[in-house]
Length: 260
Image (cartoon, rainbow, N blue to C red; front, side, top):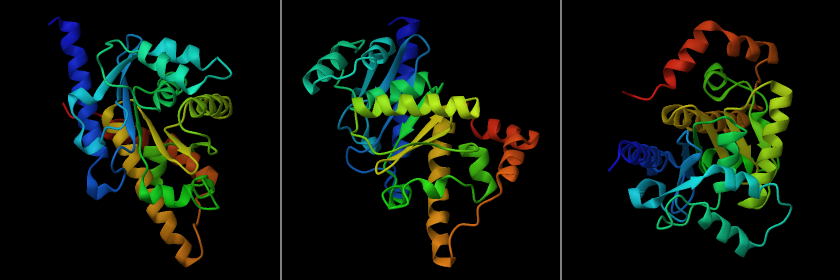
């Protein structure tokens, strides 16, 4: 085995570790085959969880390595039949023997490129989804209610209205990430899919997990606040101040560091 092959196996194993953290039953982030995660290899390929695999029980055989550029090219095509999408996903695999990649491969490719993430985590958190699946949708997340969510999840989330998972969602997420960059000058840390779930865009596995756990806490606090009249949102000026504080930027960097 070459040094490059060993490195790719290490990255695959790190992806498996992140999936196990996301799939811990007591966290209520995902059950059965829900959710997925990916990481950029920095060489035009990325590892992603295989379709139908359980996050909490994921094994090395449940990950597939994909070429990024063919997936991004497909998103330029206006319409594709399901059979064609399946065929192109298989053709984009680095190793044909790998398992079929997640249906959200297009979403992950967009987040790794347009979102400039190195690691992407997507779950169907009970706490977040009971808000995203309500009539309010993502609206309760458009204002911050406590400082740590600003530090970990960024000053504002990106939001995608409900669209069919898979290819169509990849197209919609690309549109939203481009809009977000134009408005905010950079990519988001948190992407909220209405009636679907949260997506974390991290520079490390640790940061992706932190974003997801903080989004879950954020949702639980917002949900509980409605029992006492609703959220007391922080002023946008205060959110900007927290986001720009040097000590909080330092803490953000330290929190996102993977354990050595």
